[in-house]
Image 1: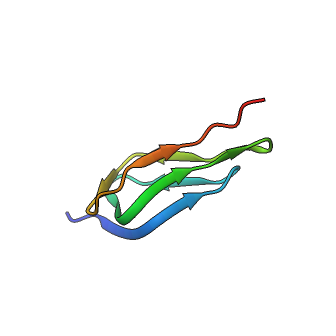
Image 2: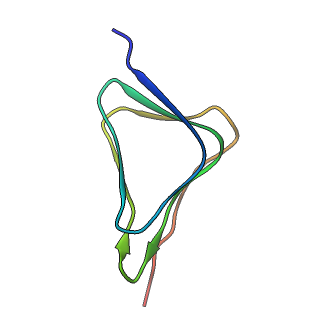
Image 3: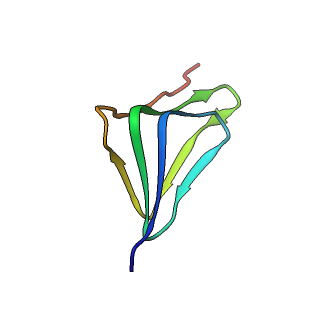
Length: 67
């Protein structure tokens, strides 16, 4: 069974937001980075039950707000 493929470029996930990659689903970042942002109001999150791939030269960056 083939899964779903979702493709995106430079993806920034804002604080308080999450991305959920379901089983048998692939999130492909085709250009740029996947950035999980953070600020005083909260953090972004990535819930990964499937696959996250980078067909470009990107990477995952996690930002963390500190006080």
